[in-house]
Length: 143
View (spheres, rainbow, N blue to C red):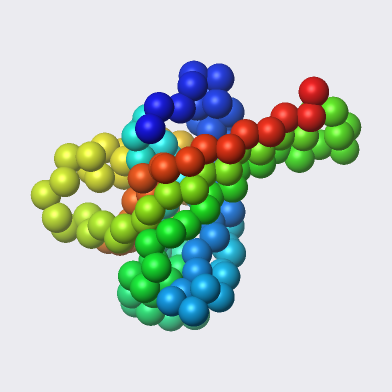
């Protein structure tokens, strides 16, 4: 799915997004995430920040994706000046990738994540990454 350059610029500027997943019973789960976009896929690391559970496969978002790959990623821009409000919502299919697999695309995504978020020079990126293939992109801007 092609994303027009103007929307891609908006996506590239964003520092955080919200990832919505749902389990097999369609119960939603929403978390803030960091991400990169390579023009085709979104990559969301399951990094080594402190979490209640240590194993990535135990995280609710990962369990949900394994049960139901349908996800939404919301990237928004808020301003007290409501004429500047905007968002991009990406709906697609998610999968779980492992850094230990020989995957050049994933290795490039990890390089982009480290470049975009210098915090990853101190906090490990982890071995697991959520990969989203966009199927539908919805945009809105209050102009």
